[in-house]
Image 1 (cartoon, rainbow over the protein chains, first blue to last red):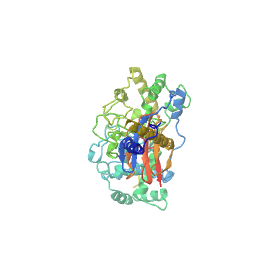
Image 2 (cartoon, rainbow over the protein chains, first blue to last red; image 1 turned 180 degrees about the vertical axis):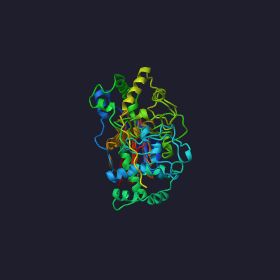
Image 3 (tube, rainbow over the protein chains, first blue to last red; image 1 turned 30 degrees about the vertical axis):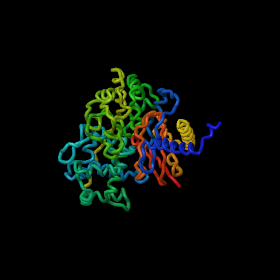
Image 4 (cartoon, chains in turn brown, cyan; image 1 turned 90 degrees about the vertical axis):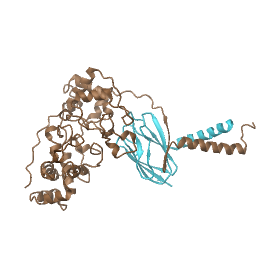
Length: 361
Length: 106
């Protein structure tokens, strides 16, 4: 019994040791006001893989376009935004418009490996599509801009792109007589400013939505809308291929950032989140709508075909600390690879032609 | 001394179990934090559980309360203790739609 109740000195020693062990246990990563404890494994239980019908429910098209309450849709704003989007006078050279790099003819990209900016100089990254930008959570390959309104002003001002200081731009647009009433109609009481210009362009961009594709008809119940190969590809996409871990939902992206092991030196998101290993070489996951029309692929335009893209994922890319834990050799068969490509081509819609607007003079 | 360490471990495990029982658990299933905003007392902890099917990277860039759990695999759980009062914005570095506010009060 005497051994069970410790003496006072034992208690004191116990407290000291406990405090010491506690410090070791909890001080694994301590930065300022927050202490991170050790990570432990827990039992999540077994989850059954979802069946085809359950998977399909994740891909239903939305019924309406979301517009932010700070910049609600009006037809006047969208019409003005379209004129600005196609107006080459937004660049200092008067030779480039938003549509130069984000053209409806190329699935709202430019069909080039990397964009071409001011003075025909090549840019560092592939021009992303603007299709379905209304659903975007964060913008640019590296996520450096938070809203589509901010995004609209980015390339206009960037010295390597349209190279147009906003003050100079507004002065130029003010001298084009027909713009003034259009701004007045779209922004009563606000008039012409960089802010209203950005709101108009963003509103127009939000109206650029991928139209119904064979895949949508299949999701809605028409079993004949896509081939058996494509259906098998959809199963690989959601299963063995792990594609839907990032390319999820009707627009096939969760807007997340992943290093997918491309050998490019560009650190992407890492520039803005320097202390986070997984953000080095990470780029925003693009949606896959109209993907067949958007070659070449990846943030650096380094892969020419969808077949090459599937090969890259099957291989797993460059193994480095930043590489996503989801990237690993997949062991896909030739049939599975071919089925995946067939599936991705069912995301191509019959895009109706986009009429280029008559521009104000 | 062995007895002392044993006692220390018993006390510690008791404290940890107590802390664990009191912690609010933040789930991440379906690429979303289970709470948009939580309020905890200064010195209290949250348990971040990755019960999703893919890795997450919980972190905060709030000045003075920066932390980074790194890549947290599915099936892993990490406690985070908040020592100072104030609002701490917690995000997943990978998934920008995942964000929550931790309000640390006196």
